[in-house]
Image (tube, rainbow, N blue to C red; front, side, top):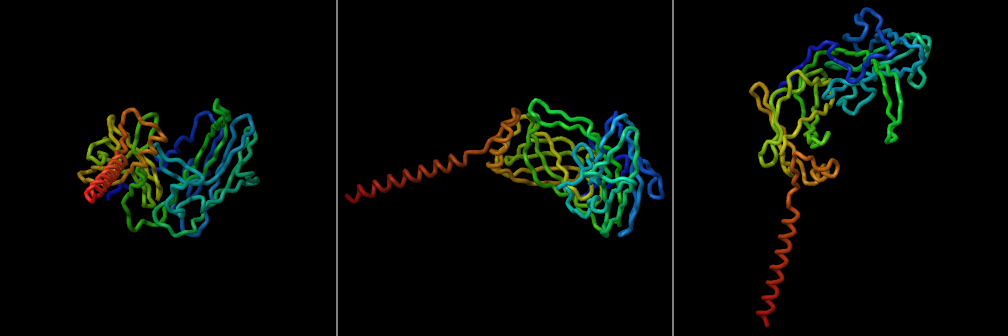
Length: 332
């Protein structure tokens, strides 16, 4: 299977839902031999060698603020890349940047993982990166600076916390990858979002490289061979981060019929056809209905296998009773 690998700049590794206008938080990376950009860190490290970077965080407001500071892992979503402290979507924890990163404030210390900044105050931190594993491909992560800018309780008594997050993106290029693997499609399931039925699935990027998800036309066939979803997967649209699991989805067509059995997800790209098969049981469809209700634009039928079995059992019992009665009558 062909997957397109990216020679993508750091600017393209955007921080998903992170940077907001109006925040008092300013973060810059000090220029150095391996740091030519004030907003990111990217280089090719040697194994078991420490590399030090100075990052300045500045509170431009007239109020004291607390800033949580932590190294993160870059993980892909359908809408971009998000940088999180930890994730279950990483397929190989050797590629977790936090394992190789230490952050220390200069002349200060982190309290419960946070740095306190007085009004108009700036502080410097030392970021030390030391990759202790001989890895192929690349690592993608970040140094996160998170500021809570608002808390409130809504009518349902749920705490809503607004957080501004600034991320220094870190991209480490290791040894060249010797052998590249294809993408894997797993965990197909029907879901519901805003009363619309979707087919969700996970794409596993088995390579420690940034790549684009597959593009081309697609169709989803139900067990009777009827098309229940079709469309196009846009080219160079969804970025897959190194050795991670990414959940994607496609919408079902109006009038789509969901029944128990074997489904097919077909992708056609550059004249090549790929077929991914998955099975959906009666129990899974019943669970879908219990959890989401019945979407108005699709039909869900769990079949009548139970009624058929019951009918056969009743018929068999009736035949036995009649046969027994006939035998007894004949003997008498």
